[in-house]
Image (cartoon, rainbow, N blue to C red; front, side, top):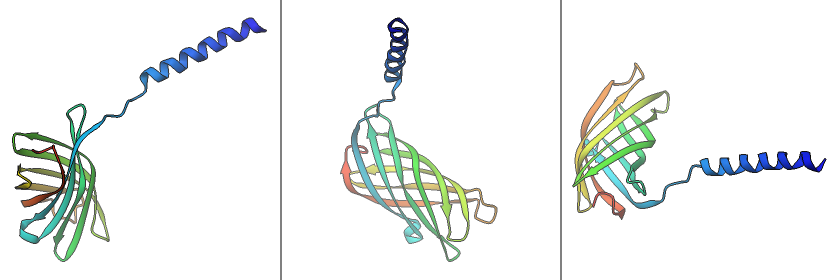
Length: 152
């Protein structure tokens, strides 16, 4: 009986060690920035948080709110990826938007400059809902409200 138990214990130990080796280690946050932006001189607003991770990737999450035909469309996103080269910022994100009555998946593309705590540029917001505008483009202007070390 004891001889049969040893191989079972060895197999269990090997499986445990193998699983530990394959365990996904989370990345460390190096820096983060919170931004608040105004869209099209007041037609909407947004906020986003840029997070620089230890593998040099930059993630972005936030919320974009736009007013179209007396409806406020809210576009939260959590899965964006960004690049910052010198003072040029670009990011893409997606999610599910809502106007309070209907939902639509959306894609958001943002580009511009971010320097000394201020930024501005262009955006493109596209929706999949056939009753919503297919593509909304415009300008954004914003301020760094917290943090640093990502765009600087």
